[in-house]
View 1: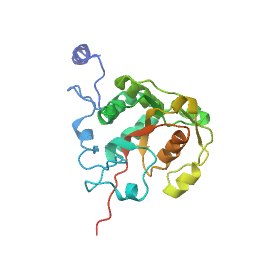
View 2: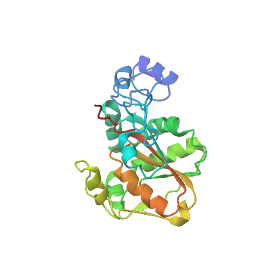
View 3: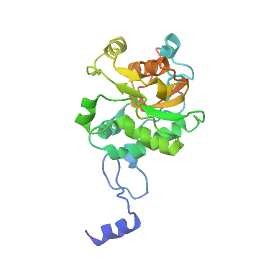
View 4: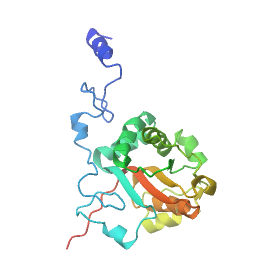
Length: 236
C-alpha cells in the first residue's frame, strides 16, 4: 500500500468507492457523479396509489382501471439505467448494497407512522439456497431498524415455485403466481404492515402477496420497493 492510500484509509476508514462502477470517490458519497446521473428518482409526479413515476400529476390509468391490492405503494427509483444495474448487482452476490438501498427506501416511507411491522416478499427454499440470501428480506431487516419496527419473518411464505416471469404479461404472471404464497393469520391479523420487495413491474407479484395477506386479516398494506417501472400515459 502506498503512502497516499495509507493516508486516505486513515482519514476514511470505509472503502470509499462508487457502489455501481467501483471507481474511487472521496466525498463520502455512495455513487460517483457519472453513475448518479444514470439514476432517475421517483420524485416530482408519481401515482399516489402505486407510487410509480408518471407523466401527469394524477392517479395512473392502470390504478384507475384496477386498483392494486395494497393500500399505498412507494418506490425510490425508476427501474431503468443505473437503478436497474444497481439492483441486478445487488441480486448477484453483492448483498452489502442492502445498506444503501434500504436508506433510499427509508426516505420514501418514513411517513408511514401507523405501520406496526415490516415483512417481505418471500422466496422458495430452493431459490434461497441458490442465491444464498433473499434480497427483499435483507432490505426489510435494514429498513425495520431505521423505522424502529419489528420484522415478521414468517408473515408469508412462498410454498410453490413459479416460472420465470420476465417475458409474461400481467395476466399471465397472475396465473403463474396462483397458489404460490401462504400467509400466517396469527402473524398478520389486524396489523398495518410495510411489505418490502426490490422491484415493482406489472404489479402481479404485489397483488398475489397482498391478496394473501389481506385474506389472512392484514388491516393495511404499504408496498415498498427500491424501483418501479415508469408509467407512461397514452396521451391523445
